[in-house]
Image 1 (cartoon, rainbow, N blue to C red):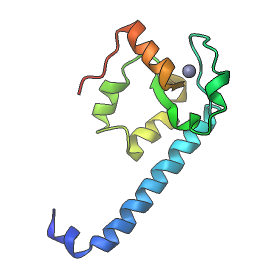
Image 2 (image 1 turned 90 degrees about the horizontal axis):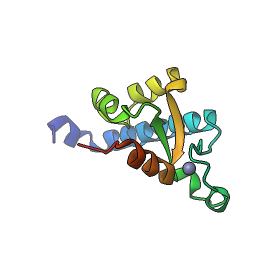
Image 3 (image 1 turned 120 degrees about the vertical axis):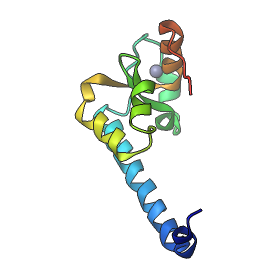
Length: 115
Ligand SMILES: [Zn+2]
């Protein structure tokens, strides 16, 4: 840990918290633009789990062409403003998927997460 970070731990903690909140709000904004709903590419019955209060937290922003992982790497991970801004300005390249559909898509397209 850098010395500055130790000396200003409290200040940094507040900053980190604010940063996380801002990221969260931006994610909410993106999810809202996608209608807070899985795009359901395989026409699966979502009516059961769409009612669950935790449904929204299962939604994932997916790169339609499946090169999201590579891109995320270029953007240094998914949880930063540059990446979220990229999504906001390239909405047509993305879709919202629930975790189920995202796994199905990966299986069907042979997309796997390699770190
Ligand atoms: Zn789905």
